[in-house]
Image: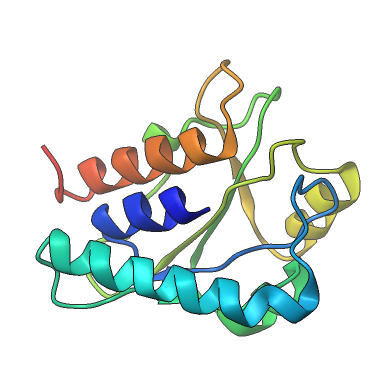
Length: 157
């Protein structure tokens, strides 16, 4: 997660939401979460400075899907990366022309999303997206997805 926070910051995210899902491999102990969050926030600050960004992304506390939706689900572009399906590719997703429009992108755990989580996100208005036929580790999918999005938005390349 330290590496993901660093690289996602360098790629220009504004908020990073650690998500607790059913198949997440490493479950931090609740009494240690504040320390993890502080560490990730410091990493984000250092990465923002290294990449000469004016704003430092916010690293939130650990949330589950309903908490995340309640707090951040108002944006129009809500997507979930999925594997082994016929979801549209990330390169084909519609993008808003508004520079203030936020994109909420859920990237799953190492074990993938459960059917219940996929059903829940569908009900909440998340559109499934794919990075292609390869199965990527969570950290690789994060970097690939953010790089593609930033390229499409004109921030890379």
